[in-house]
Each structure stands twice: as structure tokens, then as C-alpha cells.
Picture 1 (cartoon, helix red, strand yellow):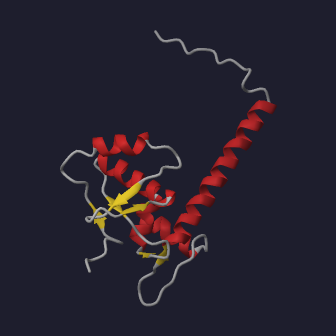
Picture 2: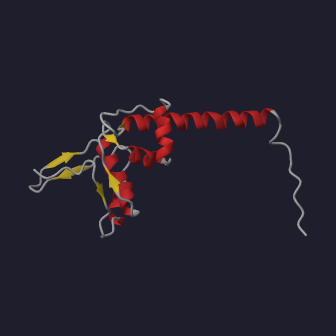
Picture 3: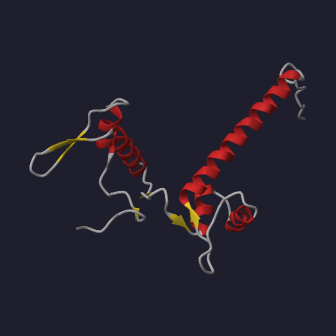
Length: 154
């Protein structure tokens, strides 16, 4: 059996993936994609597997490396920080405040991938709600109707 690529970062191939991207993008939301084995046997790909394939190929076609990881994977604090786009000290503050759950079996904290993704989803929802509220306040106060006097330059 071959080694698993789970948890490994795979670099894009040197050859162009443009033709494959075009084929995958031409297929609809519910594709009838099939995998053909070396002996000609065909297996229909479930739509979830096809969507993952489409996303992976699309990312690799733009030169991005890809990592496939199970949802229950445990991350280091640096990996979790990178995923959220924050510094490691900021992530540690989020862990210590209880915003994101973590385990500390020894000296090092470990964060579950699904906990990081849930935090990111919550943060996105809160951000969207705050922006919606700001727009509502601006509309209620008539700020959209006000004009700004242009600044004159010499």
C-alpha cells in the first residue's frame, strides 16, 4: 500500500493543468464524473468528491500547494495561526480566553482543525452582522444622502 498524502502539502505539478481545469469547470453542479481504473472499470464519483477534486485542481493550476487533512486533525499553534491569518501570540490569546478549544497533553498546545474552522465561521458571521448593523445605522441617520464637499488642491 502506498503512503497516505493526508497531512502532507503537495506542490503543483510542473505541467499545465489548464486543460483539466477547463474540463472540470464545464461540468455542472451535479456532474456525472467517473473514475476509470487501469483495467477500464468505471466508478461514478460522488458530487462531494468531485467538488474537492475541482477545488484542488483549480488551486494547483494557479501555483498553490494543497494539503488535504481530516477534520479531526490536530494542529500546532503556528499552523492554526497561519490558517486564521493571525500571529501565533494572537492565537495563544484566543486559546487562553476560551475562544478556541485546545488540548495540552504535554508542553505544547494542540488545536483541532474543526475547532479552528468553527471559530473562523463564527468570526465571519459576527463580522457580517456588525457590518450589516453599521449600514443600517448609516441609513437610519441619513448618512448615505449627505454629500461630501471635495477638498480643493492648489
